Length: 358
Image (cartoon, rainbow, N blue to C red; front, side, top):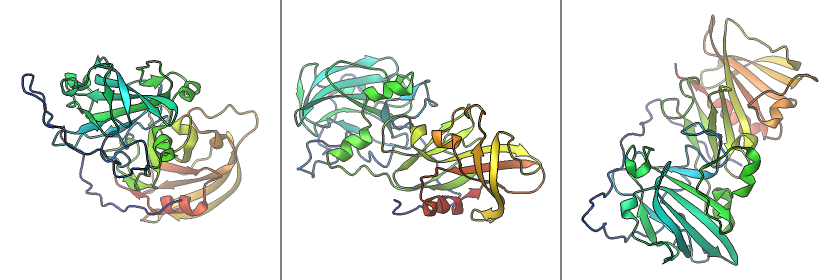
């Protein structure tokens, strides 16, 4: 399941700056000559809409509950380019017809393109574009891999104040939708997970392994930790439940229900156990790169106790959890829990990688 883990030092470089994009009103846009990622795979009818699609899905992937800008469940993948120092081209994923290309609140520049692929009709939303770089009129045809725009500059009107990134969403059919979030997890059934869409058509969507960095990743103010994120997984943070979920990028529905590992925390003088759970077994142990003092529990929510809010379904069942601390006395304790169906070796690799950084 995991091909590799990445080991980073504490001096991981931060993502800085914003893209410097073409925005001259009078001049023609730069020549659009870049080749779309995936064009070399002639057997596939689709290409990625932007370079490094798989590598840059580090915030707000499909199905995540809104923590960045809006509430609800994200219907798209966000591809981050806040570190870009040049224009970032956006490409049509397949042959199609432009349905809409204008400025929309919440997006800035946006294009809606209808694509007919192997006897199926898909509609794609390309959001947070520089509207001035859109040179294709509504109703015009585009071809697979054709450059259609540049990303908008972050924190400007081009992105309606958003960071520099591509919001890319897909659904079957021809109706025009423009929303970036759905109010309920059930409504996600009306959207396609772009990760699985591209994989189905033969593109390599696997994201590389990386390390959670509390200075860059959401939740870092609560979780002063570094730990390995396996290949093909990402992180969701819930600031209401104070929960980090490590979820698989592939799959339908909310990211939370695809979670394989969760992190929570509590501040205390000593190890605590909840009255709402049955402890079947407990053992002293050590975790992490510094052999932090820990206790491993085999626990199960008691019958009749209300469901734990904001948690994946398996957290309501019998599972393994490990509580650990960096020092004695009143301090922050962290708890890392395992989906019962997750391979123990994968979980152990994550646990072994943990470092408390402050």
